[in-house]
Length: 112
Image 1: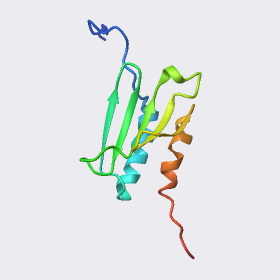
Image 2: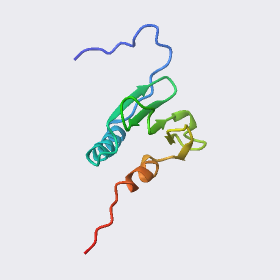
Image 3: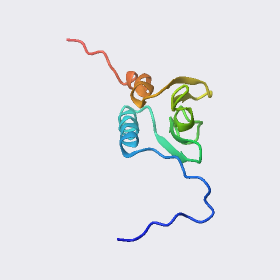
């Protein structure tokens, strides 16, 4: 096959989501769209973090942001869930517990 060469001028690598992480986030996004809660999303990959924003409407500020900062891995945890006002709702070392408050919104009480 071919040889992969680094892009010239790039001093540090870009942070991104793994396939499993992005799959988990997109799965939640799809369920929220099906429930009518979210309409749009945005993704950012930077030098120090990666972020996934979920919007109620595309013209508004994001309702939630799921953020990955590997530099905080050994401290508070590299994952954070940030709400619309910029407050960190939850921070941790694993993605599942960070997404739990959003998944809880999808639960509905069913009567017999």
